[in-house]
Length: 417
Image (cartoon, rainbow, N blue to C red):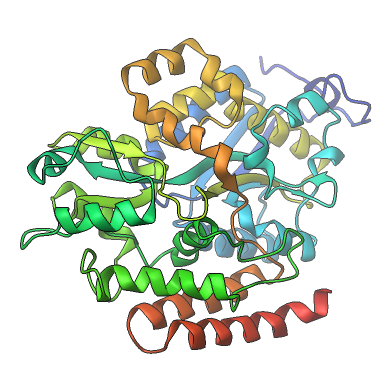
């Protein structure tokens, strides 16, 4: 017999009143499969474990492509009346989702303050807006530096010492570059703004305010940042000219086309499983400071979900972010465990003792900042992406390209101030 539970039971410890949950609750969850490893099978496994533990709830996980695809498809489904109760979407989508009145803050679903406070603060930065929690971290990352230790040895470099400064990165990159491979590749398609934000932070300047209302694309330190990125190919010759493809960079690294690459920690397990050479993982190098933006996806609950569906969605989110599941997720994918408790589990402690690179992204949280996000995020981000690529491909100077992106951002954001 199907076990009957109530929304109040699911929200134990809360003061929220809720009607009894229907005998069976169906959830539709949109999920991004964007990078690294057989993520579909991993998520399917977690969902199956959840359904086994909660036979009164069934979950239809719809894998929708990259983060932009997921947002578009989930919102299209909502607009057409198709039921969807929750999704993992970009952490940086929060402003737009709030503006469109599509999601509810988690404080409307639970008053479990201990649970809401159990996640790494740096991973909550994009999800907490104006005192409320709109997103719960799950598929989260920082950018890390992968490097080929065998190539370091061949170049006479210490394989245990990745560059820690821009100057060291350039110097080592020159030693590592030859006719067969480049010293460094930083992707400039897919998510160029993300890599650029990392470089700008390292150069001592944020590219946006923390209220989603202002960008600083034309600040001299930001312009200098883009000029430095371009110099890696044009002046120093350690990186290919033009753009470097996000989607094929991991394979290029595995095939020995570059000695170093910057990429999401979400690729870690795939690199570990497929590299035919000795490799290392390190925090990104700094200039004025160390730093990386966080990245990846948060759980959101859609406003149109019924009370029963919200309660069931909360139960699924709590299950998937619980320390044991977060540890399993981190081991199988390379994404971070989203809470300190995940790294205290026996499984993740044993794994990181055997494979210390799995701690790099977490340790980098000490230097991390919120990922680039504003109102009108997609359009503002597109302007920045276009500016980056225009400069890297030589179509415009860094100063002119970023001035154009800043002017466009000003037009888009002025109405929100």
